[in-house]
Length: 61
Image (cartoon, rainbow, N blue to C red):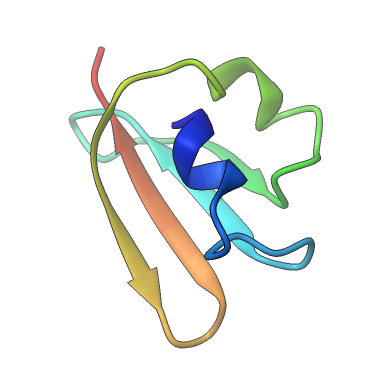
């Protein structure tokens, strides 16, 4: 997941939604928020980028 956060797709105001494999929301906010930080090293299952500057990231458990 850290590679996605470091990419040019994620800007300071991009809203990230982190979900588990059952699509339960684990965290939501900008990449620099404390609630997102614990998931930086998680392995991604996939992600969805929207035109409204939002990214939904599904992580593997």
